[in-house]
Image 1 (cartoon, one colour):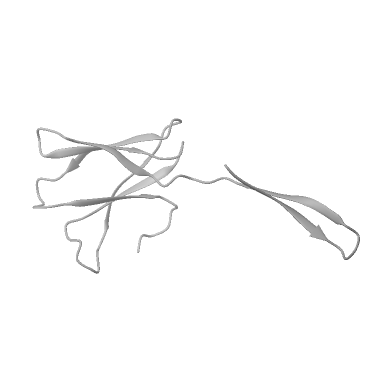
Image 2 (cartoon, helix red, strand yellow):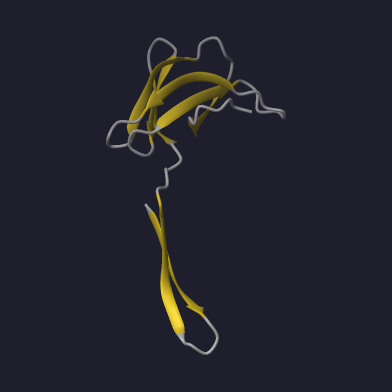
Amino acid sequence: MLRARGRAIGAFNTGSSGLIESVQAVLLAPKFERIEKLDNDTLTLNCVGAPNQSCLLLATSNLAPPVQWTPIATNTTDSHGLLSFPSVEISSFPQRFFRLSQNRGEPEP
């Protein structure tokens, strides 16, 4: 949660003032925590984010603009904000880059 507080002064010559407060829930951007290479040319990607956050794993084999990210999988963090994407295939690619984003149900650009 993010909380902002401030004092507002109003009205001419009356000296009135008041407190203004706003509270907003803020989701942490998901991030990679650990990557494990398995024996069968697959990866397990361990990630962390906000509790019960839906995360989208995307991949590309070329970072030259314009980058075309392909959705690979969607997963939801547990109550501690942890999640895993097991058995991500890498053997068919000479190089592969991954991106993790919050899944808002919107199509990726």
